[in-house]
Image (cartoon, rainbow, N blue to C red; front, side):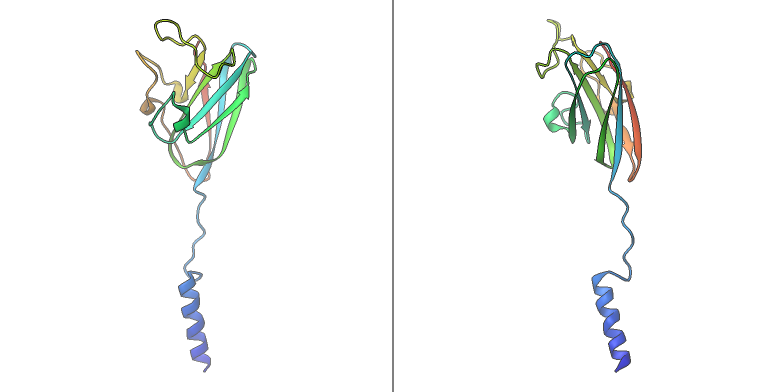
Length: 150
């Protein structure tokens, strides 16, 4: 009887996964974005976290996450807690006149500050996702510095 009870307990524990359960690693990390070179405290700064290249860098509705902060001259920090692991990129704009858009001149060149992770450059168009791409591991805290281009 005792053997039968032990065997039954073993089967129940095995079926529930308790015998082989491994602690699961966090499936998120933290991305700390330091925006450097803001030339004024006017307006707001929009920062977007991208999990893939779809819509990067301008279609913010397609970003994994986004945050808005009041501008401050010099440096601004934005933190994305629970950011998904894997490849990602960051983009930002300094919306100095608070009209919720990146203003451009008649040639399409930005009149307000902008930037991307890895300081990805724009050449005849916006920076590309592959040029801005970084990788986040589970449980990692990744600091990203974005230098504003005016």
